[in-house]
Amino acid sequence: MSDQTWQTIAIVAYLAAMLAIGYAAYRRTDDLDDYMLGGRRLSPGVAALSAGASDMSGWLLMGLPGVVYTTGLVEAWIAVGLTIGAWLNWKFVAPRLRAYTEVANNSITVPSFFDNRLRDPAHLLRVAAGAIVLVFFTFYVSSGMVAGGTFFESSFGLDYLTGLLVVGGVTLAYTLFGGFLGATWTDVAQGILMLAALVAVPVIAVVELGGWSVVREGILAADAGGTSNHLSFLAGASATGVISALAWGLGYFGQPHIIVRFMALRSPKDATVGRRIGIGWMILTALGAVMTGLIGVAYASVEGLQLENPETVFLVLAQLLFHPLVAGLVLAAVLAAIMSTISSQLIVSSSALVEDLVKMTGRTMSSRAEVMLGRAGVLLVAVVAGVIALDRTSSILDLVGFAWAGFGSAFGPVVILSLYWRRLTRWGALSGMVVGAVVAFVWGRSGLADTLYEIVPGFGAGLLVAVVVSWLTPRPDAAVLEEFDAARRLAAGAEPEPATVA
Image (cartoon, rainbow, N blue to C red; front, top):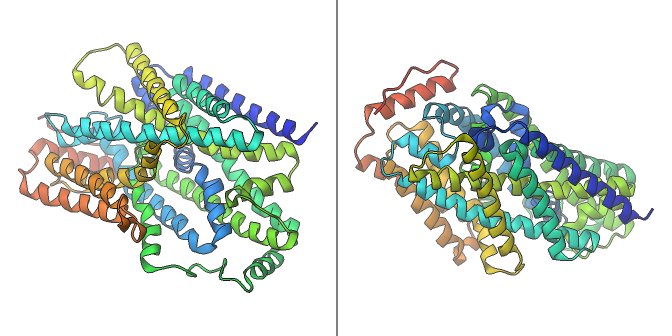
């Protein structure tokens, strides 16, 4: 059989496995709480791998190795910032958010948590947050579909539309029926596949070249006489550039598709084990991606490897080093990174549409009707995202680059203050959310973004405004403060005392 036939077999087997996992999750989904949050019964390992896989899209397997291959270790500062941000998120947000969302009227979405935490009678917080989630994640999903279509086009010679429909269709199928559990369980399988690929490729490549000393000599030879210094973390770096790269970690505090995994843990205590597993996975995968880029430089120097597109270094090395069937599984790892992010964003978008917007009309529905409405939300977001993705050059997709900073700036300060500051008011939270998003957007669309990543001023402005406005508005009532203390005790391992109902 030809190499492409072997690789096609591997991809088809992977897609079939994802559908089978989605069907198993469908059998475990009974009501809206199951569909949106898995019934709060995720083990720490499942939550950790799911959060990692849904966080790291194709950027981890293609983008990061590509920029390291082109420029060197100076590009690894983003990975460092993301790892630090993820650790802080697991350490300080995960246990308290898990406890507080249970105490605050069993909140199952981030917008509903804001609403219940601050007792917003007009539900302005919930509607505004739900709208932000829905809009930006629709663009995010569309971007993933574009990546999927491009993947099949470049790897298998299929036309773009066919690739888009395959990726969108399979991901939609297991997410539509399996809900949160379907997205989460497939994320776990995809996370394991990504880890295996990112460890195997650089390790086998080093062995193939003859050891690290040969790799190092090859990199030095490639840099000789040129301006590159691939083994330096500081070559060509500026202070603001390093700060901007590290600041990517701030985005974690406000990413709904990541922190919703914390809300789905079995208990706040599970966050400790989840942190160890999640950060371990992240360190290994990020290190594997960086090493792949460096080894690609050595491979080009020693073996004469030529790359038209540096972002394909991971795929090219896999095809050179492994049997075509194994190389097909490595290709599946790239597809897994794309699909895991799409599925998580579909679920969060659906929850924003159903739980935070439609249900605000006050209609009473049966559990079955709520689940059907959730599935309709997934379908609607997927269809809209697919239509946007039909135009690969659509200017709307430019907004996706802003989404990480936008979510981090809008939601990050509010999440942290909600969990750690009793004095936060609904007006402070709403003002901080709006200002953070606006500052990040305006900064990101100006020339200032070339010197400092927009999440730095956006996050800072949102945090400052939320604090100042909270001090200038009436103090939260006693019921809100009692609930805050109850959540804090639960996060610390104590049973909560009943909070007074306002």
